[in-house]
Image (cartoon, rainbow, N blue to C red; front, side, top):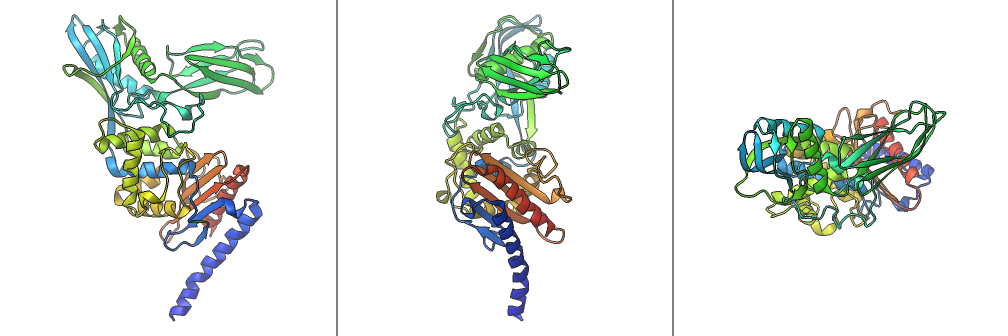
Length: 457
């Protein structure tokens, strides 16, 4: 009887594994370049090199998101505050205005507007002193050494600061001019006085485009050509001076609300002990931040959450190293020992992170069972045709919401890990990692095919 039951349970698993073997063989991706674990790590349905340490790329954010949800809890919000130091006479502040960063990654234009709007109720219409940015909650490592060495001007490589603004990046929107030969039209979001725009691109006939946008210091340079029939195209660029960026952003918003700042110089410094709190703006909830980090693979949010985790653990300043230590301590409660994997960068923007598919499967399985994590975590994961990194993948899949998974990508690295839902039982945990040379696109297609096969089963 027991032997018969064992065989009954084993048959679908063997059939399932045989189908996956055929898919892998047909893909042309060498099995030796893969790490796969499907099902609970203690009794996997299917595995390939599941105990081999591999670079996970942005699958690293899975650990960061879990630690943030466990530490801060659903609904927690970081705040940005405004302080004044000086007397107010006849609607004029005879002193400085301080913006104090509380580690809120979501201080975007809308929240800056709320912050300035709340400040307006203090009936201050003129500021004689300068604007001072207090970034002291974090260390001064805007670009942490745990990232890869090479720097680029793209938004994914933005500097991290306790008082950021709009992800410390800028959206540059380009449209064709009215007629052939005209300069293209360039718009910044948010509009700001921090950048100078140099527009060297021209409008041509047709609907093609060959536009390039680069950032050099505080200059945005647009070159190339755009057909008059081409739709708007957006480029995202990072900034290089977080203090001047948020300070200038505050000055711009104050000016828009009719508040004159006589000395438009932006400085860095700490809020003095005698300063008065006059306004604050709460950011997104932890659930929303983890959602943004996982769905859009946002490196900036991952590193800011990590520095906040360091502060939650009693550090005097938020640092990546202390925050990573906090993450690893949290993950150890899931049964994965700190000494058995490498994890130095919380966003995965490093090749020094190394985990096994089995370890990641263990973490995912425990997160699913953890009441304080499971709801926010599983809802934050992308799904095919939804928002985020899976929006254009597995488009022919009918049951799209049955897949919830985080993606990962670096040169030579592809990852996909999460859950496959089932109608009459618990979700199946899966981890797919590729570490190889030159077969990234094939690996991505393979992982999509494997996930679809699991849904269809």
